[in-house]
Image (cartoon, rainbow over all chains, first blue to last red; front, side):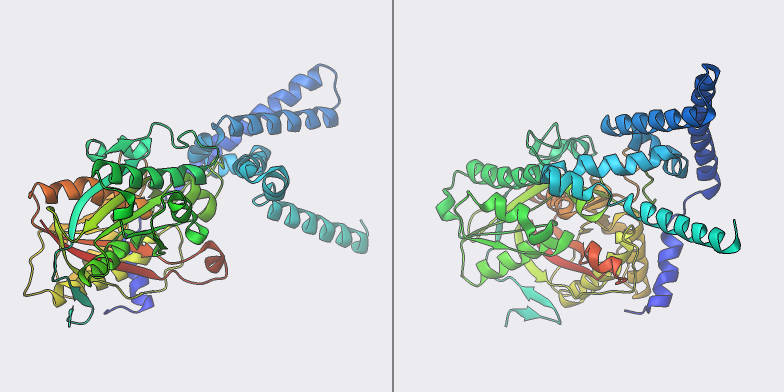
Length: 146
Length: 333
């Protein structure tokens, strides 16, 4: 074989098609923006009905998470995600999808060792880093005098 | 000595491919080779409670139908050589559980079909067996959950990724009868040129495919001229790379090189990115399309070089690269 790893890497790169970042970013912007706009509309509707901003925000989360879980179960969310990319992963709907998808997938291994044990295989790292960074920020604000 | 050249075994007695049977899932059935398959299931789960059970059923039914169509008794089969992609090759052993035929499970990842056919040829040529069934399977849904993400997870698959074929192909090899004959076997070396991208299997396997094809062509140079060389599941990227590697070695197979992963799907319309993959890919394409071409003598000499990536998700998460392998079987009509 006339290739070493470096030379071969160049050949691989030459033949491997690259994702179109620009087009993907536009799709992500449209899909992510739409999800967030829907959230804002729901929030405003509830606030107009006399519910406080904080409570309306909680209701928005419940509705978005519930809808995303339902769409995951119906096998629709992955199709939206295929086009939307980061736009459907980053908002809270993506987080719900990443919890419900393994829950469905591993139910064949039982409720405890399947669904429950695998529930956070994808979302787990998000929670870990979320908690860690909030603790660090909390400590810093305590020390610096927040 | 039955070994010729560096790596090839010459099969001197009759090793006949007596018959084949192929079962595929709905997506494969809709592909360009739809008319060639023996059976197309209309639902990937095939009435089973889990994807794993459905894959076992694919393999079991392929073997049962092969035995039934040839009107032979299971006792006449000396061995089943089979393999698949799942951990501990469970699809194969569970499929063989009720068959009551001596069983050897073999793991060669997606190269398994050529590997089992090669080993069976040596056993028959050596006089150790009269009839051997070689069978492999893969299932998109079992492969996704083992190697990648849950099915309903929303995300984008990279353009270099491939689509695991849902299907099983079974081949009956015998020391007598009519049909295409296996003439030589080349078992490949593991070659790893440092590809660590699990979404670019074609690139990981291409050097191994090129190496095995080159070695077979050198070893059999004065014996056979292949009309077609078909790789297992290099896909569109791996095929281009392997052709380029061989061209550098002054071996030009571009015109007669086909790839099962590119034949089984309509790459543009079926949204499979670089093409098909999995043990079932080369198995169903060989046992349907190519077997028919050989049997009807529309193709005289074929080199069937299935390709495999011998990694696991765990070892790749630990930073390891992907070792590739390819085994080739020379067949004449």
